[in-house]
Image 1 (spheres, helix red, strand yellow):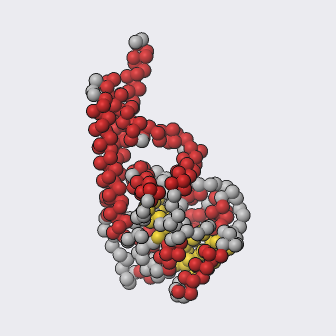
Image 2: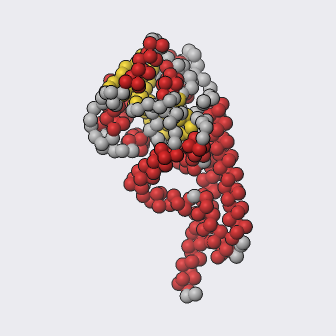
Length: 352
């Protein structure tokens, strides 16, 4: 072996072992921060000061239906919050089922302030933004909550998000997770959102990195207006990332709620899960290509194999033993993290 090749292999091995130790640091930080962030006790608002909490305009974009849509929408009519309005956006003018659900809930809860907008307004390539534009223009409160149709809320979820909106915070988002369900698709979603996704999400939030997802995000409307309003984001497919980016550029921070976002779709399938992950990978590759390149090396099997090889080159350790211990400890770490998230969401409410 020539000297330059020897130096190159040893340098590469040292570099990957440092990267591998960084992966374990992310594991540890996610577990500690997740336990503190998701399980700390949040004091309910003082009844005397509850009226002083700002009003919230909740924008609910609806596109298509699933078997849990009605019960998901109903949880927004039972929120224990003094001042809020529900703004439903139905993209398809022929979507009679979603409209029927909303009308029946309006009749069931006549005291809740509700408006329905149909058809949207074409301002760009993002269909979700197009669908929400009329509701955004009609919203009357200083805080906006954009919440997807598949999200299920508890009575105090909105209060929890508003209380997290400190003076220096411009956007409060919920960490995505899923309700309990039967079958392989539900298991895949739960494992993904409770391990890999939760690990990156919690660690990013700890260091103030933009990791916001748009499925449930509370924002200051004034900051969005300063950035040009919803219509300014119609040219982006990943509008949630650019919402957060615009808010960060105005010297405000991001924060996550203590309650995860309970995704409660009734039409889960393996193909839809794969399509969703593929779409996210394509978006990340386009927006942050450097992190997309590192993603394969951050997975359990590949990172363990390369770390075992690097350790063998540098220290002559047993690569098989190293690899098996790596996998065992990785699985234990993932189990601890998903247990933290799962226990939290079951304490919040039971998802059928």
